[in-house]
Length: 283
Image 1 (cartoon, rainbow, N blue to C red):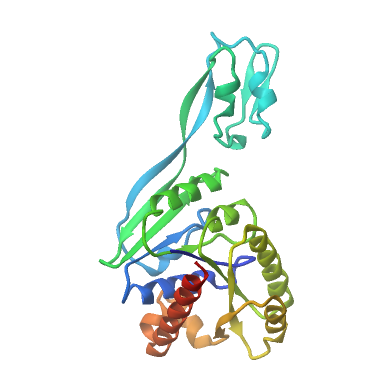
Image 2: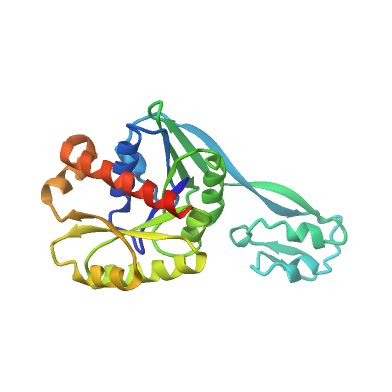
Protein backbone atom coordinates (compact mmCIF):
# COMPACT_ATOMS: atom_id res chain seq x y z
CA UNK A 1 0.00 0.00 0.00
CA UNK A 2 1.31 3.44 -0.96
CA UNK A 3 -0.09 6.56 0.72
CA UNK A 4 0.79 10.08 -0.46
CA UNK A 5 0.96 13.14 1.78
CA UNK A 6 0.67 16.16 -0.49
CA UNK A 7 -0.51 19.76 -0.77
CA UNK A 8 -1.49 22.18 -3.47
CA UNK A 9 1.42 24.44 -2.56
CA UNK A 10 4.54 24.53 -0.44
CA UNK A 11 4.55 25.49 3.22
CA UNK A 12 1.27 23.94 4.31
CA UNK A 13 2.89 21.37 6.61
CA UNK A 14 2.86 18.15 4.62
CA UNK A 15 6.36 17.19 5.79
CA UNK A 16 5.28 17.78 9.39
CA UNK A 17 2.45 15.31 8.85
CA UNK A 18 4.46 12.71 6.90
CA UNK A 19 7.43 12.69 9.32
CA UNK A 20 5.29 12.29 12.43
CA UNK A 21 2.93 9.82 10.79
CA UNK A 22 5.82 7.71 9.52
CA UNK A 23 7.49 7.64 12.93
CA UNK A 24 4.31 6.69 14.79
CA UNK A 25 3.33 3.98 12.30
CA UNK A 26 6.83 2.48 12.57
CA UNK A 27 6.19 1.73 16.25
CA UNK A 28 3.77 -1.02 15.25
CA UNK A 29 4.43 -1.67 11.54
CA UNK A 30 7.29 -1.88 9.08
CA UNK A 31 7.14 1.23 6.92
CA UNK A 32 9.16 3.12 4.33
CA UNK A 33 8.86 6.89 4.11
CA UNK A 34 10.06 8.41 0.85
CA UNK A 35 10.88 12.06 0.25
CA UNK A 36 9.79 12.74 -3.32
CA UNK A 37 10.27 16.49 -3.03
CA UNK A 38 13.56 15.91 -4.81
CA UNK A 39 14.31 19.56 -5.58
CA UNK A 40 14.37 20.42 -1.88
CA UNK A 41 14.07 17.26 0.26
CA UNK A 42 13.76 17.95 3.98
CA UNK A 43 12.38 14.83 5.68
CA UNK A 44 15.95 14.03 6.72
CA UNK A 45 15.94 17.04 9.04
CA UNK A 46 13.96 15.00 11.55
CA UNK A 47 15.96 11.76 11.24
CA UNK A 48 19.69 11.29 11.79
CA UNK A 49 21.69 8.66 9.91
CA UNK A 50 24.52 8.08 7.46
CA UNK A 51 22.78 7.15 4.20
CA UNK A 52 23.70 4.70 1.50
CA UNK A 53 23.90 6.70 -1.72
CA UNK A 54 23.07 5.44 -5.20
CA UNK A 55 23.50 7.63 -8.26
CA UNK A 56 20.65 7.95 -10.76
CA UNK A 57 21.44 8.09 -14.46
CA UNK A 58 19.23 8.45 -17.50
CA UNK A 59 20.07 7.58 -21.09
CA UNK A 60 20.61 10.46 -23.52
CA UNK A 61 21.79 10.41 -27.15
CA UNK A 62 25.32 11.10 -28.34
CA UNK A 63 25.73 11.83 -32.06
CA UNK A 64 28.35 9.87 -34.00
CA UNK A 65 29.41 12.55 -36.47
CA UNK A 66 31.03 9.93 -38.72
CA UNK A 67 27.74 8.07 -39.18
CA UNK A 68 25.26 10.96 -39.14
CA UNK A 69 23.99 12.21 -42.52
CA UNK A 70 21.93 15.03 -40.94
CA UNK A 71 18.69 13.69 -42.37
CA UNK A 72 16.70 15.31 -39.55
CA UNK A 73 14.68 12.24 -38.52
CA UNK A 74 15.66 12.50 -34.85
CA UNK A 75 14.89 16.21 -34.65
CA UNK A 76 11.50 15.76 -36.28
CA UNK A 77 10.62 12.98 -33.85
CA UNK A 78 11.61 14.79 -30.63
CA UNK A 79 8.58 16.76 -29.46
CA UNK A 80 10.55 18.29 -26.61
CA UNK A 81 13.07 20.06 -28.82
CA UNK A 82 16.09 18.27 -27.37
CA UNK A 83 17.56 17.63 -30.84
CA UNK A 84 17.96 20.24 -33.57
CA UNK A 85 19.49 19.09 -36.85
CA UNK A 86 21.39 21.72 -38.85
CA UNK A 87 23.07 21.44 -42.22
CA UNK A 88 26.34 20.12 -40.87
CA UNK A 89 25.78 19.33 -37.19
CA UNK A 90 23.25 18.25 -34.58
CA UNK A 91 22.57 20.36 -31.51
CA UNK A 92 21.59 18.43 -28.37
CA UNK A 93 19.97 20.13 -25.37
CA UNK A 94 20.24 17.61 -22.50
CA UNK A 95 17.93 19.47 -20.12
CA UNK A 96 15.07 19.08 -22.60
CA UNK A 97 15.62 15.36 -23.15
CA UNK A 98 13.03 13.05 -21.54
CA UNK A 99 15.08 9.89 -22.24
CA UNK A 100 12.19 8.25 -24.08
CA UNK A 101 14.58 6.50 -26.50
CA UNK A 102 12.55 7.35 -29.57
CA UNK A 103 15.41 9.09 -31.36
CA UNK A 104 17.46 5.88 -31.31
CA UNK A 105 14.61 4.02 -32.98
CA UNK A 106 13.93 6.49 -35.78
CA UNK A 107 17.55 7.13 -36.81
CA UNK A 108 17.99 5.25 -40.13
CA UNK A 109 21.79 5.36 -39.94
CA UNK A 110 22.32 4.20 -36.32
CA UNK A 111 24.23 7.40 -35.70
CA UNK A 112 23.00 7.88 -32.13
CA UNK A 113 24.76 6.21 -29.22
CA UNK A 114 23.36 5.76 -25.71
CA UNK A 115 25.13 7.86 -23.09
CA UNK A 116 24.39 7.83 -19.34
CA UNK A 117 23.71 11.23 -17.75
CA UNK A 118 23.74 11.84 -14.00
CA UNK A 119 20.51 13.47 -12.79
CA UNK A 120 20.59 12.88 -9.05
CA UNK A 121 20.86 10.28 -6.32
CA UNK A 122 18.85 8.21 -3.86
CA UNK A 123 19.83 8.26 -0.19
CA UNK A 124 18.64 5.26 1.84
CA UNK A 125 18.66 5.19 5.64
CA UNK A 126 17.63 2.16 7.67
CA UNK A 127 16.69 4.16 10.76
CA UNK A 128 15.33 1.20 12.74
CA UNK A 129 14.29 -2.36 12.00
CA UNK A 130 10.83 -1.04 11.13
CA UNK A 131 11.55 2.41 9.65
CA UNK A 132 13.39 3.18 6.41
CA UNK A 133 13.87 6.66 4.97
CA UNK A 134 14.43 6.96 1.22
CA UNK A 135 15.32 10.40 -0.12
CA UNK A 136 15.48 11.43 -3.75
CA UNK A 137 17.83 14.31 -4.47
CA UNK A 138 17.99 16.11 -7.82
CA UNK A 139 21.46 17.06 -9.05
CA UNK A 140 22.03 20.76 -8.52
CA UNK A 141 21.24 22.71 -11.68
CA UNK A 142 19.29 19.87 -13.29
CA UNK A 143 15.58 20.00 -14.14
CA UNK A 144 14.79 16.33 -14.75
CA UNK A 145 12.81 16.00 -11.54
CA UNK A 146 10.48 13.22 -12.63
CA UNK A 147 13.39 10.93 -13.50
CA UNK A 148 14.58 11.05 -9.88
CA UNK A 149 11.07 10.55 -8.48
CA UNK A 150 10.55 7.60 -10.83
CA UNK A 151 13.78 6.02 -9.57
CA UNK A 152 12.71 6.48 -5.95
CA UNK A 153 9.36 4.85 -6.57
CA UNK A 154 10.96 2.01 -8.52
CA UNK A 155 13.27 1.25 -5.58
CA UNK A 156 10.41 1.01 -3.07
CA UNK A 157 7.76 -0.58 -5.31
CA UNK A 158 7.88 -3.92 -3.48
CA UNK A 159 7.71 -2.49 0.07
CA UNK A 160 4.45 -3.43 1.79
CA UNK A 161 3.69 -0.03 3.36
CA UNK A 162 5.02 3.22 1.91
CA UNK A 163 4.41 6.84 2.85
CA UNK A 164 5.31 9.27 0.06
CA UNK A 165 6.07 12.91 0.88
CA UNK A 166 5.07 14.62 -2.37
CA UNK A 167 6.53 17.76 -3.96
CA UNK A 168 4.38 20.90 -3.68
CA UNK A 169 2.04 21.96 -6.45
CA UNK A 170 0.22 19.90 -9.06
CA UNK A 171 2.72 19.80 -11.94
CA UNK A 172 4.59 16.82 -13.41
CA UNK A 173 6.57 15.95 -10.21
CA UNK A 174 3.29 15.73 -8.29
CA UNK A 175 1.74 13.52 -10.98
CA UNK A 176 4.77 11.20 -10.96
CA UNK A 177 4.48 10.84 -7.18
CA UNK A 178 0.75 10.16 -6.87
CA UNK A 179 0.33 7.91 -9.91
CA UNK A 180 -1.04 4.46 -9.03
CA UNK A 181 -1.19 5.05 -5.26
CA UNK A 182 -3.88 3.95 -2.81
CA UNK A 183 -4.76 7.32 -1.29
CA UNK A 184 -3.63 10.95 -1.35
CA UNK A 185 -3.94 12.91 1.89
CA UNK A 186 -3.96 16.63 1.11
CA UNK A 187 -2.70 18.99 3.80
CA UNK A 188 -4.25 22.44 3.62
CA UNK A 189 -4.81 25.56 5.73
CA UNK A 190 -8.03 27.51 6.37
CA UNK A 191 -7.29 30.48 4.10
CA UNK A 192 -8.50 31.52 0.64
CA UNK A 193 -5.11 30.57 -0.79
CA UNK A 194 -5.28 27.21 0.97
CA UNK A 195 -8.75 26.55 -0.44
CA UNK A 196 -7.71 27.52 -3.96
CA UNK A 197 -4.70 25.21 -4.02
CA UNK A 198 -6.63 22.41 -2.33
CA UNK A 199 -9.34 22.59 -4.99
CA UNK A 200 -6.78 22.49 -7.81
CA UNK A 201 -5.12 19.40 -6.30
CA UNK A 202 -8.49 17.67 -5.82
CA UNK A 203 -9.43 18.34 -9.45
CA UNK A 204 -6.15 16.80 -10.65
CA UNK A 205 -6.57 13.75 -8.43
CA UNK A 206 -10.13 13.30 -9.69
CA UNK A 207 -8.79 13.01 -13.23
CA UNK A 208 -6.25 10.44 -12.04
CA UNK A 209 -8.93 8.54 -10.06
CA UNK A 210 -6.89 8.78 -6.85
CA UNK A 211 -8.99 8.84 -3.64
CA UNK A 212 -8.54 11.94 -1.45
CA UNK A 213 -8.69 12.78 2.25
CA UNK A 214 -7.88 16.10 3.92
CA UNK A 215 -5.93 17.37 6.94
CA UNK A 216 -6.33 20.99 8.08
CA UNK A 217 -3.08 22.44 9.42
CA UNK A 218 -2.76 25.70 11.35
CA UNK A 219 -6.40 25.47 12.35
CA UNK A 220 -7.56 28.54 14.31
CA UNK A 221 -11.14 27.42 14.84
CA UNK A 222 -12.38 29.28 11.78
CA UNK A 223 -12.21 26.40 9.34
CA UNK A 224 -15.57 26.91 7.63
CA UNK A 225 -14.00 27.73 4.28
CA UNK A 226 -12.36 24.29 4.11
CA UNK A 227 -15.12 22.36 5.86
CA UNK A 228 -17.79 23.62 3.46
CA UNK A 229 -15.66 22.68 0.45
CA UNK A 230 -14.94 19.19 1.81
CA UNK A 231 -18.62 18.66 2.56
CA UNK A 232 -19.53 19.72 -0.97
CA UNK A 233 -16.91 17.39 -2.48
CA UNK A 234 -17.60 14.56 -0.01
CA UNK A 235 -14.00 14.55 1.27
CA UNK A 236 -13.25 13.26 4.78
CA UNK A 237 -11.30 15.57 7.12
CA UNK A 238 -9.08 13.22 9.10
CA UNK A 239 -7.32 15.66 11.43
CA UNK A 240 -6.98 19.30 12.45
CA UNK A 241 -3.62 20.55 13.70
CA UNK A 242 -4.02 23.80 15.66
CA UNK A 243 -1.98 26.94 15.16
CA UNK A 244 0.03 26.46 18.36
CA UNK A 245 3.36 28.15 19.14
CA UNK A 246 4.38 25.22 21.35
CA UNK A 247 4.12 22.85 18.38
CA UNK A 248 6.01 25.29 16.16
CA UNK A 249 8.88 25.49 18.66
CA UNK A 250 9.20 21.70 18.72
CA UNK A 251 9.32 21.56 14.93
CA UNK A 252 11.77 24.46 14.69
CA UNK A 253 14.14 22.57 16.99
CA UNK A 254 14.19 19.71 14.48
CA UNK A 255 12.14 17.41 16.69
CA UNK A 256 8.98 15.45 16.04
CA UNK A 257 5.95 16.54 18.03
CA UNK A 258 4.88 12.90 18.26
CA UNK A 259 8.18 12.06 19.99
CA UNK A 260 8.07 14.98 22.40
CA UNK A 261 4.37 15.09 23.30
CA UNK A 262 2.54 11.81 24.16
CA UNK A 263 -0.80 13.45 23.34
CA UNK A 264 0.32 14.00 19.76
CA UNK A 265 1.74 10.50 19.56
CA UNK A 266 -1.75 9.22 20.31
CA UNK A 267 -3.34 11.60 17.81
CA UNK A 268 -1.01 10.54 15.02
CA UNK A 269 -1.58 6.91 15.97
CA UNK A 270 -5.33 7.43 15.51
CA UNK A 271 -4.64 9.26 12.24
CA UNK A 272 -2.54 6.34 11.01
CA UNK A 273 -5.30 3.86 11.82
CA UNK A 274 -7.85 6.06 10.02
CA UNK A 275 -5.70 6.39 6.91
CA UNK A 276 -4.92 2.68 6.68
CA UNK A 277 -8.55 1.73 7.28
CA UNK A 278 -9.81 4.26 4.73
CA UNK A 279 -7.25 3.28 2.09
CA UNK A 280 -7.80 -0.41 2.77
CA UNK A 281 -11.54 -0.03 2.36
CA UNK A 282 -11.04 1.58 -1.04
CA UNK A 283 -8.97 -1.28 -2.46
